Length: 323
Image 1 (spheres, one colour):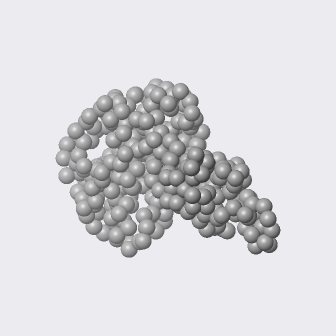
Image 2 (tube, rainbow, N blue to C red):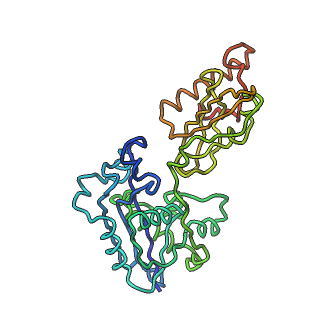
Image 3 (cartoon, rainbow, N blue to C red):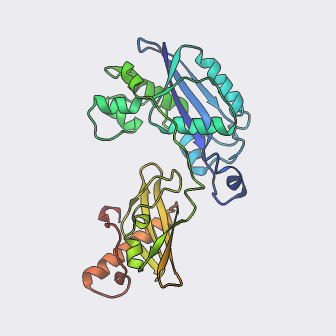
């Protein structure tokens, strides 16, 4: 049996309000643009590798951040095969009697969503995750990124193999895997694809009625906003900042997708109660800078006992290291 280490690169919409995203976004959050893989034999020898670029058919403009990280451009992918042909090339290259390995759980979910969206159904074996095996071997408390894992194992990146290229990352993952004490134990860590959500997560969340705005801000809806990309619960980054008596904004952090802008709106119901709507979206740098500044002003105002922003309740704790 052989091991094939798989890594993927994918594109994302530049604008989540445009027509293209509205057309595909509920079924395709990320579109694959490169497959990289490395073949390893049972003796932990690296035998072969492959890199397959993929021409995107939905999100055809490469997001600037993706372009910067991967060095993949729309022009570079213009003559590449589309997803179905790329998968046929990959499956043919894999051959028979192998298992697929990845670093972390993201690739398997993105792969499955692309397979479903493009209605491609290759006969692939189970995917296994090297990352938890690495965590166990080094007795770590948390998962570690590939670059940090290499540093811990004293594996030096090569000058011409930059990170965030599917082939290069697959090669580095293969190096980490072959240097583990018991690499065959990776078969104890099968992966299950997770549902990728963006459009549903971006819909406003309506909570129960509250007797006051303060009670609403103490609710689970306010304290556990969901990521606009993966819909997982985020950790609040400081307190909410009032824009008016019935509108507040704040920040939350997703462990995978970074800072989220959280908007809370209250409406007065006929019986005098308050209904609350919570909506999240990706936070821009200006959002983050503005809110951190307002949080600092609120903290200073509260410390000095002055009126103004401090008369609104705090939610969460202010992390001063982020100011």
